[in-house]
Amino acid sequence: MPPCDSIRLNSIELKAKNQTHLIGGLKAAGFQVSESRSRGLDVLTVTGKGGWATISNGKITVGEGNEFLADEIHLAYSKQIVKVAASKYGWAIQKKGERKLQLQRR
Image (cartoon, rainbow, N blue to C red; front, side, top):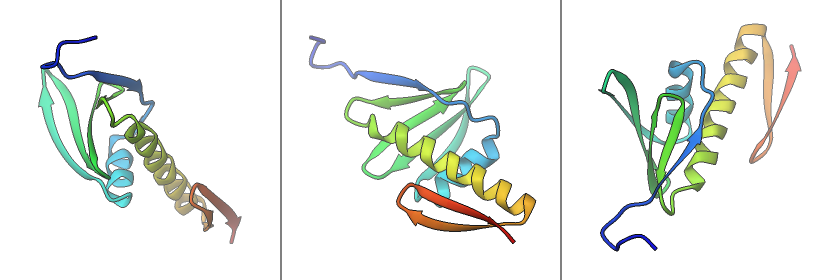
């Protein structure tokens, strides 16, 4: 068991190729996002939905108890990528459930 004055952090891989889409997706999902640089790397600090996370160098780092945010971040990024692709190819998006979208060619 760690000492009582320590903070446990968990890191989860995030394969986000486009930071602009990542930020757009996070904001669309209701997160607050701030950008900074640390040791030459871009760092995003994400807050909302009762927790916080940092994203840097392809990894999401969350504090103990905030592990659910990694799924929320992945979902927000995925939804944004689908929206961008739909717009690019002229598809219509219909929401079919909390985590389901249907694409239709116009």
